[in-house]
Image 1 (cartoon, rainbow, N blue to C red):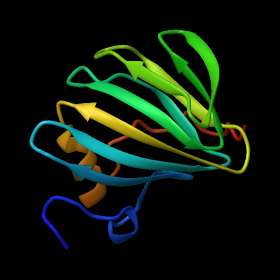
Image 2 (cartoon, rainbow, N blue to C red):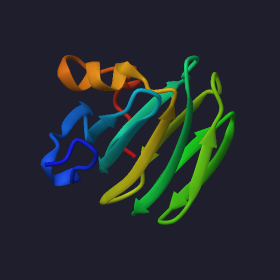
Image 3 (tube, helix red, strand yellow):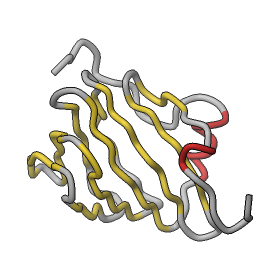
Amino acid sequence: MSSYWSSWSDLPEREVLPGNFRTAVTGKEMGLNRIRWVHPTELPAHTHPDAEQAMVVTSGRIAFTVGGEKTVLAEGDVVVIPRGVEHSGHSIEGEATFIEVFAPTRIENLVGFLGGSSMPEPSGGDTR
């Protein structure tokens, strides 16, 4: 395997919240995650004061809120989340996948992969 490329299938996947699975890769300046949500899952409201985040949905649909604005994202939709802007989401049905890019890279993603979750705890009981 080259030091420049890999396949998602060659990388380990980690459940970081119930039903929320992350496969992470990182460079020196940016990080890339493949996220897979299996319904029901919830992403609690949180911010990233240290990084800007971009997402592109590659399959399925998710409910997502950024800066208080709610929407449903589907395959091909893209969202950019500036540093410090609160965001959250939850699954709608079945399974959904999306790619996240963080710049600069967030070592928490790899720490979350290696140890405990780097995500906030879910609010509990919400099984949308």
